[in-house]
Length: 517
View 1 (tube, one colour):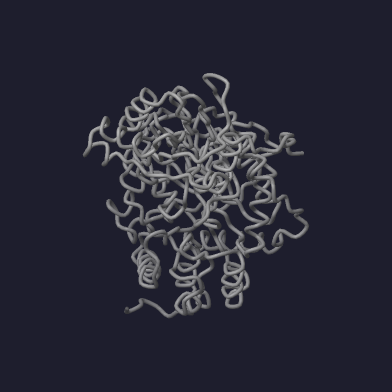
View 2 (cartoon, rainbow, N blue to C red):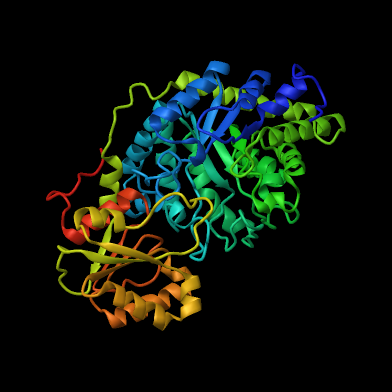
């Protein structure tokens, strides 16, 4: 590909510095190492890049051999969204579980332990926590990734998470500014529109971001959402009114006074890519006040990096983007890299290996219609499976079947989908399920049953046919509890499944875990 300028040019180095690209493979490709030498300052790590902690540590060491101060970023929320444990499920419950417990000391401890593990692998920037207030129960993309629907609760746990993560030497990136919780559209697929007025935004969406900034969050991630109350034309990621006029502006002028790094959400998401294209979108984002361009969840190659680099250089030369604005953005990236080096790699952070499981146990909510007889023989697990959230991904396992089969050998499982319900009819689907289960106890596992009418109908029919059915809700427990026993885990992390199975088999410790100190 023909480049516009020499790799030694300051403008080119600044253009590379503001990019946070992904790549493929479990070791760094040659092209990535070359670009680090030419000025690239950040790299994004995704599930496809992680086999185990030892391999990830070797990968980050490989990057730092080329550039000692490189920012290595990851999207590790814990809970449903995990990259560190993408193939086995997270050792930590997600935000909704922590919000359900509502113990900020526990949230701080969980974030600190997660940060310690990231730091041990050489990761120093985490695109977390999600500070979105999940005010819309139909939200298809946030859900259990939020601490809850109450702004004050979300604010105190966001602040605790930021404090815990950064105490381990890993920079927190609070997202998705100015708040993705009141949407009914996933910005991975389309551009969501939030109709809330400024008063509502100030009293709801912005409350957790103010708390995160007060707690010292080093970075904030913008959302690809359109808020006409702020900007009727451009989504927040591309809006100077949102990024400069609201996030950066001092409190005296009605802003949040944030002076750290502003990172965009993934620019390949269709909310941006399908409307503006990633090159044009990246130029507009930097011009609007963003400092770092996240790209690589789907686009992860050298050509993408060169296209974005050259688009930024061209925009400066054409007068569309201020050279000073680009230089300021690059300077903020480098400043954060310096902070991570001073903060250390989790040195002095005492391990708390059981923090995640203790939190998952405390988050479990149990509703029994009558005294429940624990499972002691093989069960039949019916997983009512919705389409995967893109942020969560398809690789990460969920549900209770594996853990239940480990304790009760002979337990079988099958997945039931909306497509199957539509093709066969709810009655046939449930009849087949009951036949497959035979005399075994049925454990129905659901996620966000309130958002999926097919799932609610199938669950009603199943309970009518088999009243002894146990229900495990691993999403947002918005629908009324049902079944002989209803367990709400507040997330689908591996430890949430473990806590649920302990309750089903009464194999939990005889003494409940103590609150975190």
